[in-house]
Image (cartoon, rainbow, N blue to C red):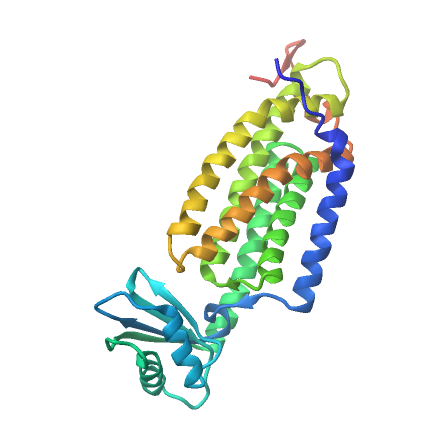
Length: 309
């Protein structure tokens, strides 16, 4: 039988590590913020198709030579389709933008491309998406707080929401520190991270509740440590299989979903860590005890029955 790992005995080191990560995250978000995509800032999207695979470096060089800076150039679906994202340009129509972009990227290309579509996202739409995205995160956190408080106990609810906030902030911090583009696909990944991390935390909490009711001896720390060890194999197997898929998506999925996969990769790693070293230690720090999770007894016709199935 494998020796049990003393997870909660290392909670002070984990608290220091998490605090440092959060400090770096908050500092980066305050100083340089997120590199928002045109979904949030507004701008123009131009899709160009070719009959053969194209070299993106040549296209980027052509755009820079034409004075079109800060353009994002990436393959879209295949190596023959190219998606170009441009920041807002005042006083220039979509037709002019597409013509200028096409002329710039075709310089040095053996084959000329055709514009497939041009889309414009206004700044007002970008502001609305930013607000709606922030509200989606807040509503999800609030809903989780109510759900966990109803299913377990308010101390568990506070611990789970704190762990989720920890995961979201650190994922955002990575995008801020490395200035990776933050668009709607990344926001969707953040919401998926919340669901994944919550599921992992609920599994741990469920085993803690069960052991509080079954084990007669041992302090809260001992029982919670036992619960973490019992769920460890499930946590690791779930995380590893998920990571294998995400690594494949990040490497082979193309640039269109690259940042989505990266956000999920970061979120899964941080979420696995937080379910062990953030959510559970916080519940312990809040003073959870067996009495908090004992099934209430009811008295029927002079006899006592508990509510446990």
